[in-house]
Length: 343
Image 1 (tube, helix red, strand yellow):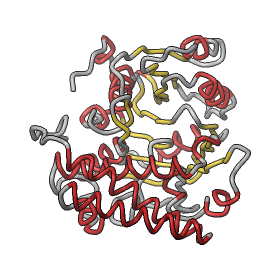
Image 2 (image 1 turned 30 degrees about the vertical axis):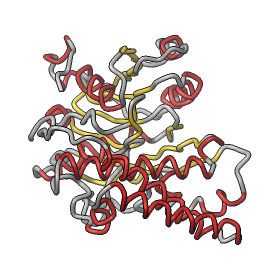
Image 3 (image 1 turned 45 degrees about the vertical axis):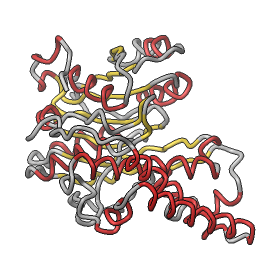
Image 4 (image 1 turned 120 degrees about the horizontal axis):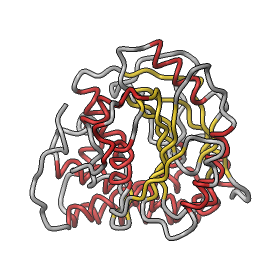
C-alpha cells in the first residue's frame, strides 16, 4: 500500500514514542482514553506524542481530540480511506517516534502504561515487538450467562483478554504468546517495513480481524524479537451491545472469515497456517462449510433450550466460524497477491 504523508521523511528518532489511536465515530469513548493519557506517569526526559487517526468519522471526533491540545502533544489526522488497516498505515506514516505504542478508542490506560513500555524499550534494545495486559471490564447490565463465562474461552478471545503473567517472557507464536491490537508496541523501523494488510481488519466493507497479528508474525518470521511487558496494562471497556448471543455469533463469523481469507490469499504462509486444526476447519467448499454451520446451529439451539449454556456458547462460536469461512469459499476467486512488503 502506498503511504501518503509529508512526514514520511522525518527521522523516526526525532522523539521517543508515538502513541497511535485509530477511531471512527466513537467520540465519547475516545474522550475516556485521551483522559487516561493525561494521567500517565512519565519518566523524566521522555519525549512522546499522540496521533489520533480519524478514519472518516461523521461525529465530533476531531473536536473531542483537539480539546486535549492543552494537555497532550496531540495531532489529529484525517484518513478518508475507510478500514482499520488503512488507518493504521496512515498513523505509521505520520509517526515521529522511534517506537509506536498502539492502543484503541475503547480503553482506559493504567497510569504506568507508557512508562512500562519506555522501560522495556531500554531494557531490550534488540527487540522490535512488545505487548501488555488487556483486562476486560463489562459495562452493566451484564447478562448472568455472560458474566459466568467471561473468564473462560471462547469469551476471553471475544473480549480480547490478554495476560501472560507477571514474568517478562519472550513473545512468539509457538506458545500463542502474542499481543493483541488493544495494547502492543512496535519499533518504528520494523513497523514501516511491515504495513497492515487492507484485506484484514474491520472496515465498512468487511468485519475481518487479525491485521496486527499478521504484522507481528511477519516481523518475528523475519528474525524480530518480542517481549512481554507485564506492567503495561489497559482496561478494555465492553459495552452491553457486545454482551449478547448475537455478538458472539458475529465475532466468530468474522474470525472464520479471517482465517479462510488468509488461507485463500496466502496459502500456508500466514500466522494461522501452523494451526492444523484451524486449517482443517476452513477446508472444503461452501456447501460443506454451511452444512457444518447448520449442524452446530442445531446443537446450539438444543443446548440453549436445555439450559446447557457452556455447550450452547461453544456451538454458537462454531456456527459463526463456519458461516464466515463459507462466505469466503463462496466468493469469486480473487487474484493472488503478495503481502504489502517483505522485511
